[in-house]
Image (cartoon, rainbow, N blue to C red):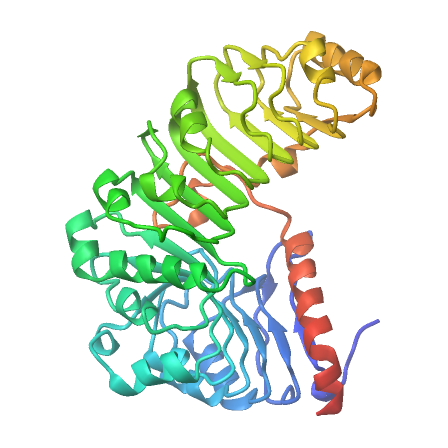
Amino acid sequence: MFVTDVSRLRTLAVFRSNQGEAEAPLSFAKCGLLRVLDLEACHGLNKSHLEEICELLKLLRYLSLRASTSITKVPRKIAKLQRLETLDLGKETVVKVPAEVLLLPHLKHLLGKIKLRKCDSGKNRNLDRFLSKESKLEMLSGFVAGKDGRGFPRLMCHMSRLRKVKVWWDPDADSTRLQADGLQQSINRFLDRASRMPAVEHSLSMEFQEWSPAFLDSLRAPAVCTLSSMKLRGRGELNRVPAFVTSLTGIRELCLLATTLSWNAIQDGVRNLNILNNLELVAQNIDGAVVIDSGNLNSLKRMRLEVERRLLQITIQDGALESLVSLHLICKDLNGPSADQVCQLRNLKEVELHPEVADGTKLSWKDAARHHPNRPNCLLITYSRLMEQTTQPASPNQSSSATATGKLSNVARKSRQIAGAILHLGARSRGN
């Protein structure tokens, strides 16, 4: 049904159609009651549209501009959106934001590839005090560190409610500069804060252009750190798990993405992570055979190995992966494990394989599933899901679409996000 009276709308979302991107709305003058505004698929959004939103939509709580590549700066008029809780600027391009964004009293989620304006990157006592005492910001995912991305590392130390952080590594940055800008100190403080709040989930994601062992070695986790999720991504070889990761004894999810991974180094590095539930390894190549030792990784419930090139051999020794429920082996040239090794995974309920795996491999896995006590589902991952992940990080100064091999369906992803926003805001929107 086509709605002609937009004056009563509380939620407006523009999705991509079969004909391509939608044109940007000409005016928001009659949309003053909007609480949720999603313009991901709008074509032609510009600075004037964003200024109009800031002037007219004072009741907004959710604003998404994910697909816009023409908006590279957020105006200071954003301060007029005093009820805004989520601001999603997307990952298509780097966006510079003023300090006014961080001073929004109800802002909880700030998403995108974000830099603080140079004129706002110096010390600001009022901003520091607000972030420490009044700010509700829980998710900063994420900001660009290094070069002229300074400002956020220092301010992150004052964000007392922060629960989720993502850092994009500027390709021109070096570890010395990042340490000077306070990134090392900010991450260490974040880890320390997570250790003092065991009942609250904290997650950290860092995306490098090239691995920086010096910077990773400078990070220190407390003796007991309850960080629940960690993701590290970069180009080149990751031949060991960073020392601070091996000490995250409370971690439940770990994701490592690199050009080349050393299986022996990974296995040794996670050996003492006794409550690790989810391990994801994504690479072009894994050095050597994958032999999962007896008694190792027994806390894992889900394991994903995604390898572009041939996996020489996978062997699961008796007594390994005792709690595993879901196994994802995403590699076209897959060799192993044997049917007997699969059957010894007593809790296994799901197996997922590459869509182009050899017919003989498919048949052997299906046969192993038939003889398994649980009769686990043996599935081929769909191409759309396979394209969600890439083995190489996108530069924070480039369009992510230029380097990624694919994306989730825009409609599917955004439907989930907006549904969550509507459920969260609906009751209050009707009340207001």
